Amino acid sequence: MRHLLLLPMAWLLAGCPVDFQGWGGMKQQPKALPYRESTFFADERVMRQPPAGTVPRSRRGQDRFFLTGKDTPDGGYVESIPLTLTREVVESGGKSFEIYCAACHGVLGDGVSRVARNMGLREPPSLVDLPEYPDGYYYDVITQGYGLMPAYAEKLTPEQRWAVVAYVRALQESQRAGLEDVPPEARPQLMKEGPP
Image 1 (cartoon, helix red, strand yellow):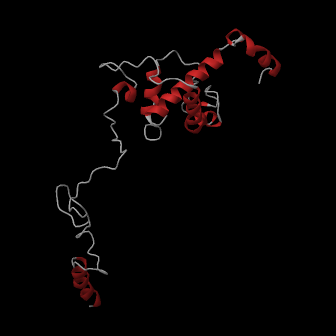
Image 2 (cartoon, rainbow, N blue to C red):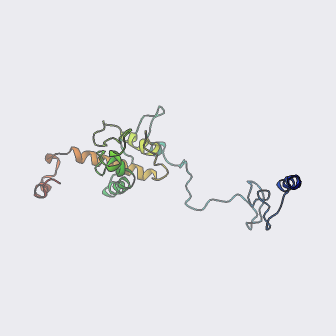
């Protein structure tokens, strides 16, 4: 008998719109709808002007090739980095490389790292031994990801991604360079230091 009384009571409580401590659940939500009035702001408008310096995610004001690494309608890659290459640009690319890339690709970009050794399925490639891809290809891979590599578009700005490409190019050149590529005035110091 007791169970029969509990059944209608549970049915009534389940459908009852109870207001607990002044909170009506999801029925009354404090939200602003576009093109509606609001008492929250003094001018009673919901739609607000973005703060100064706000950049839209699409960055429509910039060149498409700078944002995508591609410069032709069929998706051809940009051949060279669209930044003025300075020591600071390459060094900032090196910092970003060490944070985001070195764990898998190795500090020298040679694909030798603790993470790479433990990846049984597919090891990260050596960036030093890759075929000659255009700079836009590297930028696109950093932006979109490739294979097991995640995309870094959310973590690195376009400028930072191009700086990483510049650093990768510097790594490639440094690993392929011979003594004849070193300026004559720097050779004695290099010979004195010896191999690492």
